[in-house]
Length: 506
Image (cartoon, rainbow, N blue to C red; front, top):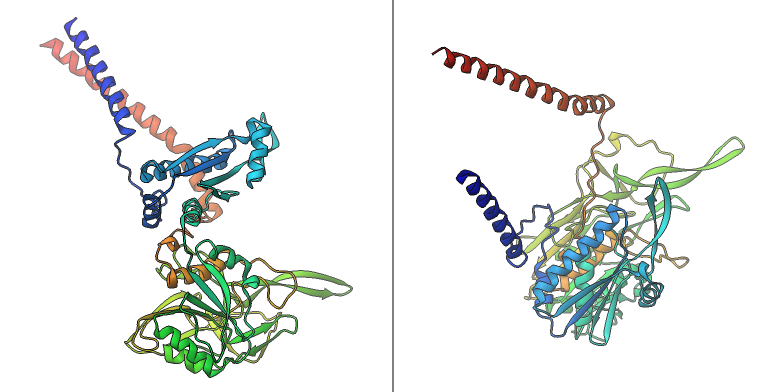
């Protein structure tokens, strides 16, 4: 009886300890983030921004409930993020979750705030139906507010939330200039990049002239796809800007392709010697790559014409990036009609390659004719990886340290090329451009957050034989283990019986 009482006391004591630990763990806990990109760890930039809030911030999260698990996880991830922010802010950030589907008035409130629903398929009682889903948030600080209209599952939620808070709390935005005067695109022609940059900067056109100096207010400048010759006097103005510690991004077309006429030509804007003096040469060649995008081609067979997609090595797809803040998190960038870079500097300049073509690359001299029907073989790609983007640091002009980013293509982030309907560009193309500007001019650390999200990790494709083997192993292994365990227990009991019988004899 005493043993049974002691047993119940022990059980009650263990339950009490578990309850106490559970209560204490809500305030005192340790968490390990074992994900590859530290997905669940707040960045230093976020910590700095949230800890230094001077006014209370309210986050109204408009999220629908009872969604499919893959979508509902976005709500849980955002809630976990808000808990971290609230803990960091020392009471300056509060949040609430609202389910707009509960009440038409709440749905109207979300719509007026700028959060539109998306339609998703939901399976219910073996039937698929469509349901409105809200996945957005409104961030308020004083009389100002910012909206995250939709959170794509897997996207960088920390970047969206932190930049919204930063946008509301920043007092004086630094200015970034897009150089004009030589046929370059305007800010309006780079709508996607401009939208991303205006979160932290005033992004505006700046025209170079012979008589005026570049104003000191520009924290960084971008020279993108000039078409006309740049006068030596303008290059001297850039040197004067760099000599004062200025930062410059150069995205240059040394060659250009015309798919309508199937021709490729050289572009000379008079900047080669100036760039070479900084330590970089953009070669007068087309880069070709076996890993490339496709173009649509109209083909004729008899009386029939049809369109087909053809791989076009003059549109390299970059997937090979160095470990650098500018390229961190990028997965795929397309550089149409790009040129490789080579280093021409010395030890006084720090040259860092940023992005490479694949290990099956080649080059083609300009001018050239594009044979769309060409059957490309391994022999057409005799070169290994070619550098197409690089960062350089050093005394690039004068005795003051300055920085440049050089990219061997000028069109990769332009939405509107030569008028007509603007075309969207890949998100990673925009991120490459914006990250370059951030690295040159930003000191908040938000550059590390832009591409922080769930990386695409597709499952490796297996041969049919391997699939069948794994299927039968998956099916048979539990049965075999159960049989082996049964045999083990049977043998063990038999030995126990024999042992008891031997004891009886004695």
